[in-house]
Amino acid sequence: MNQEVLLRQIRKKIGDKSLNDEIANILNISYDAAHRRTSMKAKFSFEEAIELAKYYQISLDQFLGTENQLVVKRTKPVKTKEDLLHFFESSLQILHVFQNEKQSKVYYSAKDIPFFYTISDTKLSRFKFYVWMNLLNEDKYLCSFEDFDLPYHSLRNEKLKDLYESQDVTEVWNDTTVMSILMQISFYSEMGLLKYSDIVEILGEVRTVIQHIEYKIQHNPDFHFYVNDLVILSNNILFKNEYQSSFFIPFNMFGYMMTSDEKTCSDTLIYFEHEIKNSKSLNSSGNRERKMFFNKIYRQIDDLHEKLKP
Image (cartoon, rainbow, N blue to C red; front, side, top):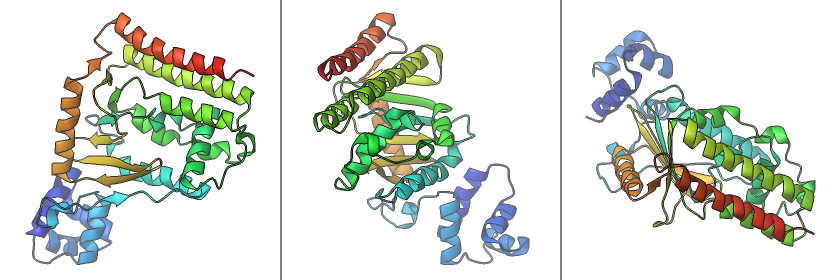
């Protein structure tokens, strides 16, 4: 029974490709051996079943026999600069199934500015990682920002950034989404760890990110932006396409648990859709509503700039 379920899930993911060829290639077995497994004349070993589930990112929850238990993946804790690079690599590996799917959709509950916008070689990106590395490592990296030696090339992950930008994306924000980065800038400035010249540059790059988002609302038909001041946003992310879904739940600033359980992802989609129904679309609400929202963010940036002037 479980083997039938696993094979059915794989067939959904490979479309018109040969099931026997796929199984043979992944398990490094002969075509005949693969055929015996797909025709149910032989059973997958436990290791083979796990290997296939990992490769196709098939949730193991459906094999547990209860709908109230989940098997989840979690990202490796980020404690070193090498862990940071591993986070990017593993995130891209997890999301590669959505890379070339035109029917893919992303839903992002943006408690903070989505990190996909800051995977670059900007000073803003470097500052975000400076903050995260300090908060995740009990101030192990608590030097001045100027002395933080994470190489810029470590921050670049154009494939991950491009993957996100190429999707049909729905983001839900509110008035406090931008406040996290502004509070971090203020905090490290007051500690004397952030020079004013860096503050000016970082705030300028925050403004550039916000301008990019405002531009996308007006010019990208696959970008849908909502404002919801009724709920506390969570940084939860749902990726979905015709074949599967993956739901990411943050458990710290740079760590996610992930499940591809169909029922959990379906329930999450229903919640996102309900949240959107109670939100204001800035794509369809007109220039006045859009400008009012973004002008408020620009004022928050300008106010902090003024406050931190020497």
